[in-house]
Length: 333
Image 1 (cartoon, rainbow, N blue to C red):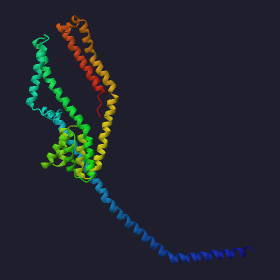
Image 2: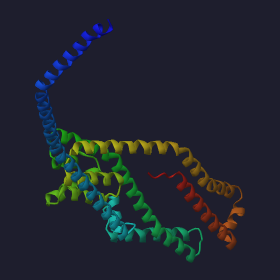
Image 3: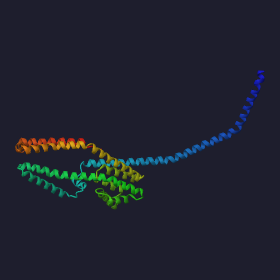
Image 4: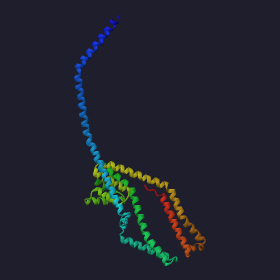
């Protein structure tokens, strides 16, 4: 009974195995052939894709190397200029201040200021030697301070107006205008001192100087980070290509963010500046009030040697304190 029940199952398994073997023998060559075709197609497709990506990767590497080389050259040039001299010469500072003075005019202003200070010191009764020392100090410091103040004010106006000029260039490039026409538009319609600097750039281009070199000269005339950023962007684009409008658009955003940061710093340091001004002015108000109430008491400071030494020491210590407070509230970034 048991053997008769197992025999049909055994026959069924044997028949199924035979049919499976026949089907495998009939269709296996075609299946392996299709698999070989598929593998060969995948290898060819992978080789083609690698050939497509290799030029793009090579172009990206070439562009990256070109950008690094340009940045390295600009950095070396800036280091060389820094090694030549820390502070600009007098003629350069006069041009940067926008005064239009010659060296002879500057020296005449120094002599005039010194002469006026000498006469003013003789009127209250100071000695000739003291008046001469004061006159020399005023003649050297007053014109120098005036030129530095004008130079700083001009740089401040340039930094405030420069992002608008960059925006004009970006809009012009997106509208299809060439870079030279955008620079001429700024030279014709911008406000000073940006207008004057771009007029100089347009004149340099008329003489045949490339745009990147002309912009680099502007960076030397206006030694500000904003102008330096602009020169770097133009230099990189002229050597490596790319979307100049996008690069200048990003630069405009950076410049405006820097402007916002300066405003925040100015607001945060306003209280400290007010305190420093009050502390620096308080001794003068107190001495003036004491002189009005007791002139004989205060006259000892200008009539005796000890009083003069005390005045010099007080002026020295007040100058040091004012300088320290200025450094504490002057943020550079």
